[in-house]
Amino acid sequence: MARTSFNGPVASANGFIGNVTGTASSVSGAVTLNAYTLATLPTVVVGGLIYVSDANAGAGTVCFGKGTDWIDIKTGLAVV
Image (cartoon, rainbow, N blue to C red; front, side, top):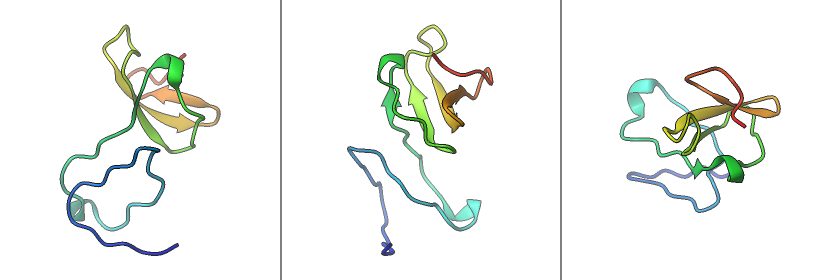
C-alpha cells in the first residue's frame, strides 16, 4: 500500500480503512466517525469504530467492533 502524507481533514464517502501510526501527541484535531442507525449498521469490522445515532434511546453512542457485534462503549453491550 502506498503512503500518503496530508495536512487537514480527510473525508471518505465509503468509510476509511487504514492505520494511524505515531504517538498520541502527533494526532491532532477531531476524528469523525461514520454515523449509522440501528437499521443501517454495517458489517462488523473487528477494532472498527462507528457512531450509532439512535442507540441508547436516541441519545447516540460510539461503538467498537468485537467478534460479530458492535459494542456500545457506554454499556459494554451489543447494540441491536
